[in-house]
Image 1 (cartoon, rainbow, N blue to C red):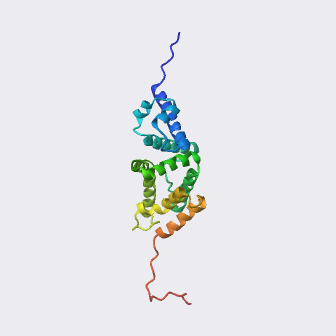
Image 2 (image 1 turned 45 degrees about the vertical axis):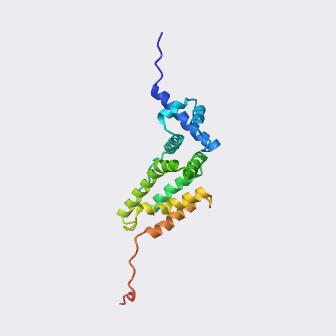
Length: 220
């Protein structure tokens, strides 16, 4: 009789981890962040709660990792780089493309519901807010900073700007509109944000000194 090989521990762990991710995202969508518990996630995933505590210290950690995993898998399905801002040499086109992808994600219930729950909890829970910022926001911010610095090096942006502040012209208005429902989230809106922001960030044309006569056409 041929003996069957023992089940792979790695495969079993990955299956459990995937079930926990799915359970966490489903629960926070159904009952909200405050009512989502480690016990509830464990029951939904069909694992013991000690399995969860072996890998994560809190439900916030579970949800943040589940959200990142969802983003990476979705990007893989569409053939996109999960954490990249293109550099085609056209800064406006590159930022517009990224913000359009962000609009798609913000309007996708799979992302919108858990991200709203985490963002809302982060307003009243400092620890969750810091983890949300560090885990989800900071990696994206660094990518914007790097792209804007490359544009500075190429002479497309003023050399005196701080990229860390400049990137807020793109993402802060979008985040506020999304969180507070102050207007529609559309490609036209984010394209306009880019046009307005780059208009102020572009290198300045030297002013003609006052009293300097303009040159007219040179006669024959």
